[in-house]
Image 1 (cartoon, rainbow, N blue to C red):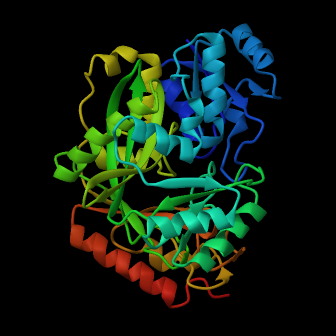
Image 2 (cartoon, rainbow, N blue to C red):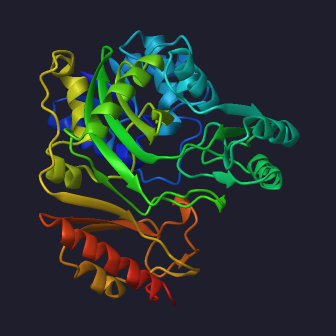
Length: 409
C-alpha cells in the first residue's frame, strides 16, 4: 500500500515514521501554497512531488507510483488531498461541498444546515456591511478573521463599530499564512463558554475519538487575540467530553469527513456545544510520543493505523484513550519584546519538578516580540506528573519567571 501525504508540515512531519511502523509506503505532495512557517522533513520522503496546478498531471504521477490513498497532513493540503482522492478514485471525503472543509463561512453554513449549532456569520468585503450586521446581531464583542487561514492569524475581538472597521481593514490589507491576499473578512458571533478541541480519525465514514482537550485562559474580547495559556486532556468519562464527542461526530458527518483525520474546536456554551472550526487534518503541535505516554495513544499513530488497517476503525475495535498521568501543554509567552534565552537561560524552567519537554519555535538568541498570537509564541512546554498540584505549582512558577525577565536581553 502506498499513501500520498499532501503537505507534511508541522505535526504531519511525524506521519512518515508512523506509516513505516504500520508497513505503509509513502510519498510527499507539496501543494502550491504550503504553510512554510511550519517544520518539514524532506529527507523522510523518497519521492517529493510538487503540484503545479494541473490536477490531472499530479494524479497521473501518483498513479505511476501506485498510490492508493491520499491524506492531508496540514491545513494547506486539505483541498488538494480531497481533489486528488476524487481524481484517483481512492477513499476520500465527500465532494458535495468540499470548500466547507476550508472556508469557515461555508463550514458554519453546512453545520447549520445539518441542524447543528454554529456561530452566526457574515463574509464580506465591506466594513460598512459588517458593521450593520454586527449592530443587527446586537451582541458584543464580535470576532473578525480571515475566512481560510489557520491558528490565530489576524483574529480580532471587536467591541465597537470602529474596532470592526479597523480590524476589517487590517484583515483585507494582509496575506494569510499561505501567502494569499485576503479579499473578504469573516465576522462571527462571539461564543462565550469553555473551549475544547476533539481530535479524531475516520475511515469509510466511521469515526474514532482519539482525544478531547480543554483550553484555558482564552481571550474574552478587547483587541487582538492571544493564544491560550495552556491546555490539557479531559478524561473520556467526563460528561463534557461525552457531550462534545457526540456533537463533533455529527459535525464530521455534516462536513463529509469520511477518511483521514480531523481537529475540531468547539465552544461549550450555556446552550450546548457550538462549532468554532474544524480542520480535516491532524491537529496542533503536540508531540505524539509525549501525548502517547499521557493518554496511551496519539492521533498520528492512529491515522497511520486507519490507513493500513481500516477494519480497526470500521470494526470499532480501538479502545478509548485514558488518562495515565496529568499533562499540561503551555504556550510560552513573552510579556514584552525581548530575546529568546540561550540553553543556559532555560535552566530554571528545565529544573521544574514536572518539566517533561520543551520545543522552541524561535531559536535561542533571536528577538521575540511581545506575545499576541501563535506566531509570536517563542515555543511550548509540557509539564507532567502524577501530582496535579505539582503541575499547577510549576505552571505558576514558569509564568513568574517569564514576568520576571526570562526574555529580557
